[in-house]
Image 1 (cartoon, rainbow, N blue to C red):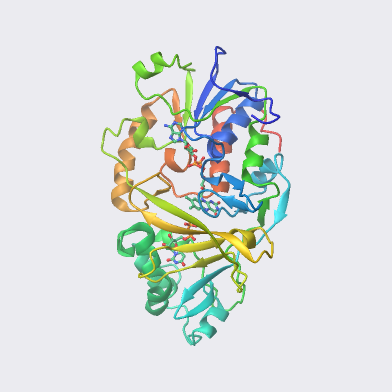
Image 2: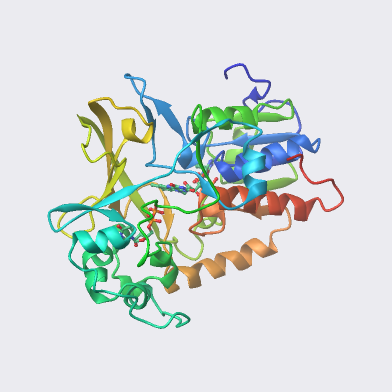
Length: 379
Ligand code: FAD
Ligand code: UDP
């Protein structure tokens, strides 16, 4: 470990808490507990910290996010203040173009998008307040059938391997539409910025604490025999941020997750200047392409470029927001509620499609709930 007071590897020390997973959820919990005087062992099966937000500099010195583009945005002052203890920020507002009908148009849909496609006559098609039953209905209500076909149907089907009718309305509700504005930002949150030295550096600083020991490339030993064989120190409390079904040995069957293949190669930098281009048509096998030099604000002529190919098999990146998966999750959640010594948190531990700031906020709330007598963490 680099210049860190956090110790590496489980050892003879006894710990108050074991945290499984060193992503935003696990690292936030580790730091809050360590600041409160508890001795924490945090493990991750991967050989790096940061979970899916992990990044690195490639041979050219361009920062690449190993698991696809991670753009930080939040409306929460306290989440932003907490993370600001561990990083300075580089202001960054994400802009995305969508490749449709032979053009590159701004996305989310705004007035410029409509004009470029000759569709400025379209207007919000439904009464606000209707409760869409699924993602298709949500799109019909928010953008209408023409724009649904152009921008949402193919992308959503590729992304999730399901028809939008089979998915929760909340999936496509993440995307706004701007009928009367030319605002072409992907997000409109109060705080939008990237960690100045990258996510990995932010995590190193967050976990750099004398009360935190960590073990990387260290999967949680799932059976008592494996724990005994590895002389695994079992603290009384466990915080689990891995897949909840894995913790319970998939006893009700595996929960479905969407995975992704990230293909990265060197390419000429897009003249359009947008770091990310979405490909919503059903025929293109990838969903989006990200050019890392543009994300970093550099004007290099060549850039590492990552295309995202959604897959059914592989690392569990996305819980699938659909009724059947939720019903199966509820059965695991009932088991989790009955576990007195384990707490389940995060995108995989709670099977929730949450962003980075929500993972941090959820961990902060869980810490405060479990430690009501303590002062709030220093912000
Ligand atoms: P994770 O980051 O998944 O961390 C869980 C960790 O647990 C992993 O490191 C895993 O290796 C470890 N683990 C699992 N099982 C075990 C085990 N048995 N033993 C040991 N360790 C284990 N959010 C945004 O805010 N903005 C974005 O732009 C954005 N873009 C995204 C793009 C993609 C392609 C993806 C997949 C996600 C994106 N997100 C984005 C979401 C963001 O990645 C999550 O909100 C965040 O990573 C959740 O943190 P977490 O700690 O809950 O989970
Ligand atoms: N979406 C779409 N077309 C796009 C972008 C998004 O249909 O060009 C839909 C799709 O269902 C996607 C969801 O909106 O899964 C949420 O998009 P977001 O960009 O928030 O996805 P993430 O960054 O989490 O992968």
